[in-house]
Length: 144
Image (cartoon, rainbow, N blue to C red):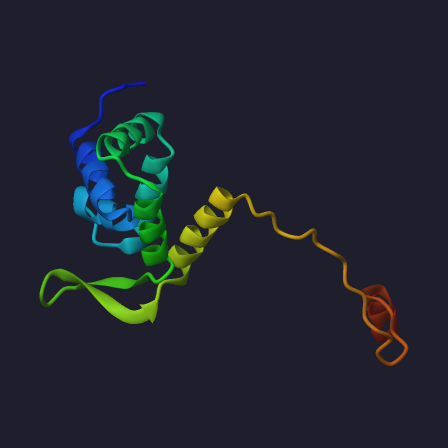
């Protein structure tokens, strides 16, 4: 595996360090206008050791501290949809929340804080019409 970054990977890293947004970085660095494709490229890139190393070195050089990270995460939690406008040949931020991006930032925040999700519990019906389980409903409806 090559340890040197390709030109596109280097541009991606520079953009990511500047914006903290993988999708926007991939849109700028790679030959795509589709945010979904860019998101997949960003995910792939951010899992590459050589890119992680480059970003970590750059963050260390720029002396990124907890406040900077908190501001980036807060911005990501307010992410809005970005679409390509073919008329103006530019990207535009919409008024609609980008829930997928917000979820990624929230997941990152949860990991940083070390918060664990509660254990999943099986839910039982509370005796609705004398039925206490999904199996009982299936039996009653003849769906065995």
